[in-house]
Image 1: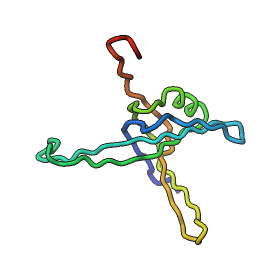
Image 2: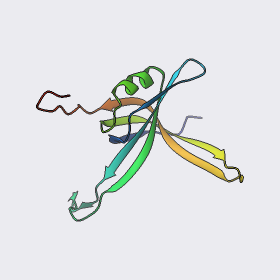
Image 3: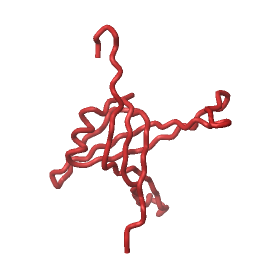
Length: 121
C-alpha cells in the first residue's frame, strides 16, 4: 500500500532564534517557531477592514539541515518550509491524551535579510 499524501508548505517569520540540539545518536535537531498571517479576501483582494488570522507553527529539521538552519534562523527572519506534518502524543498526570503537531521539514528557504542603509547588518 502506498503512503497517503502528507505534504505541507508553511511561510512565515521566526518568532525567536532557532534552537539547535545534539541528539544521543550523534545527530542534530533544530526547532523553529514561525508566525504565519492569513489575510481575508474580498473580491479577490485583501480586505483592509478585516483583521489577519495569525497562527504559530513549530518546524523541525534534523542533521545537516538542522545545523544549516540554526546558523541562519534568527528572530524576525522570513522563511518557507516544506515537509510533512508529524503528530506527537503523550499523556498528562491525569491520563488525558495530549497532542501537538509539527512540520518535519525536508526543505527550508530563507527570505533575504534586510540590510540597513548605514551598513549595519
